[in-house]
Image (tube, rainbow over all chains, first blue to last red; front, side, top):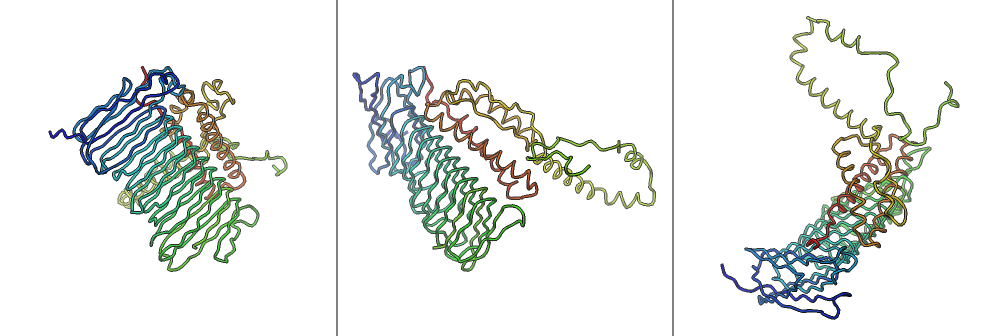
Length: 292
Length: 184
């Protein structure tokens, strides 16, 4: 096998218990231009950048395990503390430079994750750390309580974003978007999207940008507010319903009550040629719909 | 009985799990089934497969609908080991509208390990996750209460099912939050 060094990893081990013995070690391993790279850590930070150059240096300390095989590199930070969120082993600051075309998987607990310049599929997951990432193609991003700041590549891709309480901000997202949060706010700017499935419980849901011809939107909240202001090529049919919220729109149309005696409002109709399909529903959250 | 004497139902969860018929219907049904009907036997035989499938489909749909909407839960209401939470225990809502045994089994398993998962989170995250779970459970209660007033509301039914799914998603996400790399 051609063992050409393609991966650079610089690891700085530092933290409350290791400040006096902060250590920087470089190590080289081979990586293929379109292989996969897995990075996992507990605390500190992880920064991943894609680049065209194929030189590689890998840094490692006692608590870092790097393994590589055909088409695959695994970088793992091993903590020695009794509890991984108490900082028992110090925080590892990882800077990883990988071939641009790599698939990237990052699994972190409380580490902040930054990813830029990676053109392959990305799977990024953290419990409480923030994720800041450029997503050139398909991606699956998950957090429990960390904030997500995501930038799409403006080309059709399939993006899946899941958060429990962390806020989600996504811009320049094209193609298919599936996003769910519980209490986190979800803001997406589409350029343009072909399908959107967005779901929150109490988090507000805000969608802007552009909708592609034949768009399908399925948006739902329980108590979160929904705002969708986006033009769609070819127009769309819309069906909006709420149990106890209000419905606003820029169509000059009045929502009607679904029951004579109980709560419930609905709004449906068609804009333009009606090629797309929008469906929005809430329990108590207000809905604001506009195609401008 | 007049309306004044009827107890008020404020939520579907207050409805009884089942209502026994006033009399045993089975003997008559069995007698009818056992009685030969030569005139219609051949026709019945020909039509049996379609009827069987239709009956099976109908029974499955009915079972699912009944199970989802008036099924009663068997899970404990309390969260295991709630005392470790500094801000007080989470109140877990009974999954009273879902009777699918696989769902119940998976949910029970996730609840069993939830305490350990929460304890392993950083305190700030733990508080946020607990708040999110509380939000979900409050949503369940709100929707169930609304369904108590409007049981046939399709929007509420859909939102309730989705909220149950949200809870499972959070529980599953927590299950997946093991510390990477292990600890030594």
